[in-house]
Length: 265
Image 1 (cartoon, rainbow, N blue to C red):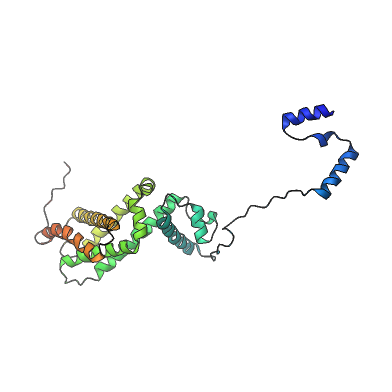
Image 2 (cartoon, rainbow, N blue to C red):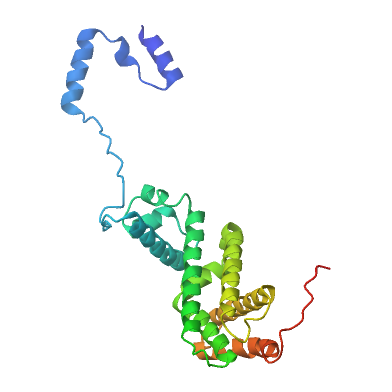
């Protein structure tokens, strides 16, 4: 190959092919020169796992790891918003690699739904404990007040997370249906608990479910309102909800079971 041919090939391929057509002795000379004067670039292997300096989480059982991931995800969602949170960030905060998260949750959406489901379950447990603590001889109003206070205290403890779940449009778009299903499940369980209260035990299940739905919705809206009005303390919020709910429910508890036509129209 001539020098012209080499230049043509070099112009067509963008590569320097001069060394391909030099005589063997000249190639050996060039190779020796390169070995003594040039450094061959080395490729740094890509680092796997958390960034350097990130504390590594200890090995855990699967259930413990899942609980840790839910704790971290809930905190990171609250601090950064759901939309701005990445799986890489959650992994870094947990001191693990991203594949570990995917071993438990298929996606960020699924992780969000799991966080919400756990929060709803804890809220239901808190409500049940509050109702159990009311003496059986107490007026029905005290059962409702205990339930409302349990809601409000839970939202107070999880204020940042509640803001994400209730006010972030991205969450509604991704997990709105799942959140609503969890809300309906919670209403059914509260309605069953109402069946343990003698004053309302005789109500049809559908009426009790309606009361539970109204109670949940009112609590959520007042809790959301408190986020915009942080000067409203918890006691005041409880009494506001009671003023709205109890005035309506009282008429259902002072007399006979209300006769409501539930026939579809």
